[in-house]
Length: 274
Image (cartoon, rainbow, N blue to C red; front, side, top):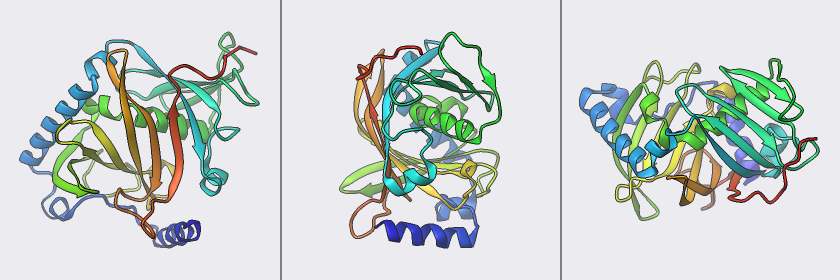
């Protein structure tokens, strides 16, 4: 399976064309007024089901998690010093992506990485002053993880939205909503997403997304959210698997898993500033 993934990536790299998540209707007619209206209604119901009001009632929310990568994608893209480090991430709520992570385990335990207004900084511990410097790894991944954690709560900040109708996967029906920025057409300058929403519970179960900031516009991945539980008034997934390609992209009947996020309700490590 890893060989197949490499071949697919290489073929996409050779094409150097940005992946386009639009369906035939969106490509033909663009985002119509009715599609946008219907899409925003669905997103409002999704946000309410996830407890968006409670999430935004505080200036910041904290997630503790462990992120484990498969060996090949991990060797190329893993953002952390060690695989499976326990991490505490503080997300500052609002339109801008602003967050910082503190490592609860590993060789750099206690160290802090942060992003504010797309600018990266590090701190040796919570008492140290931030050191501002350009760091593409921190700028990409801290913002990416915050965005994935906050997908159900950021509906007010999605500028272009369209209902993509219903779809079926593994016997489950889904409402699909297309989201992008600046222009509906595919571009290496901005991302596209498709949110797969359970029409009964209005919970976000999957999200198919592009990864333009990685420099590989052809690349897409899907995050599969699992086992929601309520904490502090909002729902948080207890785990999430990130797989190559779209939700239906399986090879020999299996997904190609890239990495996995596991929520740590109570940290398995004691965070001590060094």
